[in-house]
Structure formats: structure tokens, C-alpha cells
Length: 319
Image (tube, rainbow, N blue to C red; front, side, top):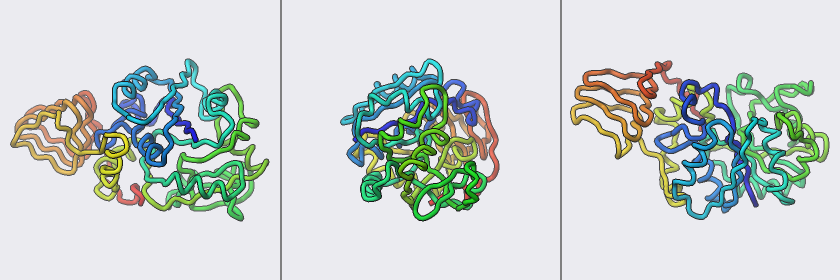
């Protein structure tokens, strides 16, 4: 079985971080977010991956090719003109072949069991199975309408009147049948492929009850790094075994003054923290320089810019 990883997005909600770094490479606990997706696929025995790229696409290619990701075969689908979630997938129809495949976003941190997903999908007999997650914020994030064990609607766009506390996680297993309903130009997968399957064979769902985080917004990204309840570090050992990389709070390549105080923060590669600094509840991206005597609290620091965040809200991180 192959996988298609969506990594071509512009990441506008993470501006200014994505001005110079593509969203799939924005690090969570010093590991590119894209690598969490690679880890889950490798752990499930899925080693052939097609990854679409557009925004800073060459940087994504160079990062992946420069790391040792043993056992993974990654093919890049370059989009000179961005095609969206629908058009980007349609472009790779021939590469994905005639078998069912995994679809997954590159900006989620999760512990979805893809083997269990595949098993349930095959038992369902339907041409597609979406991974759903129950969230108290479903009405804000975008609820999925479900009925009789099937997905019937998204945000009530089909006027079904169906509401739930479920959201789409950005992961699914799909039959090649989906390509019948998709467009080669810029388009979204929800109103083309997913809607097509709803009306032609049915779209089932798999309920995920473990770790799931969307890091697509600045607030969510910050919390994924500094919230001790996020459980991302629980992935460290299996992730290291699978792909040779693991989440960690302090980069060994950071230069930190011995008298600096660091609490519940993430310090990236080649960061420099001067004498007498106080760093709390903050994320310092690679290369950030903090001058002696500075205090950085509840912030993201990127190339000299300090972005102050709101106080942590525990319900933003869900387990």
C-alpha cells in the first residue's frame, strides 16, 4: 500500500514563520512536522510515499534527501502552480496505481494506528474511510455530519442538518474510485472526491481516540511544543526506532549560557542564549539569538522576531 502526503500548502496561518520555511518543515520539539507523518506510515509498514510540494518545495526536497530515513521511498510531485488538496491528489493518480492508499496531512501530530484503520476499512466494504476525532471545538473547527456509521456531510454544506462533535483529522484510506470525481485543476478534496464517494458507495469513518493536534495555527503550534499534556514526547522511542529521529526539547547544537533559566520551552538548533536570560513557555526556532539579560515568556522567537502568545489553554491540546 502507498501513501499520499499533502505538503504543498502555503501555511498562511503560520505567517511569518512560513515566510522562509515551508509549513511541513516547521519543527515540533525540534523535529520537522512532516517527519511525524513519515514515522506513522513507516511504523505501519507503509514505505512508498508520494509527497506533493509547492511552497518552498526545494527546501522540503533537500531536507528529506539530506536526512537518513532508512526504508522509506519518497517520490515528489512538484506543483509549479498550486493545485489544492483535490487537484494535487488527482495529479498523482497514475503514481498511486490501482490499490487503496493512505491520505494524510503533513501538519498533524498524532498517534493514529494506520494498521487498525486499514483493517476496519477493508471490513466496511466502502470505497473510503475517514479518520475522525471527537472535539469540544468541532463547531469552530468544522464538524462532520455522520449517520448510520457513515460520513454524510461537512459543516452542513450538503444541507443534511447533521451535526456532531467529530472533526476530520486529515487522514483517510481511499479507493482509486475517488479519482472519478476529482478535478485536475485547483480544487478541494472535500467537495470533489469525498462528496463523490458519499454519493457513490458511501464514506465510512474510523474513530481515533488517542493523540491528535493540528499545528496549522500559531496558537496550536506553540501549544504543541510547550504544553506538557500534549504527550508528543511519548512518541520519542518508537519514532527513533522507525526513522532515526525523535522529539526533544533542547537541541544539543544550541549554545546556552550556564546561568540562563529555561522552563517548559523548546530551544532549536544553533540557538544562542546569553547570560542571565529567562526563557519560559517559549519556542525558539533554529538560529534564534537571545541577548544577555533578556526575558522571553509565552512567545515564539524566529530570526529576531518575538511573537507573544496567549496564556496556555489546556483544552487546546487533546488526548
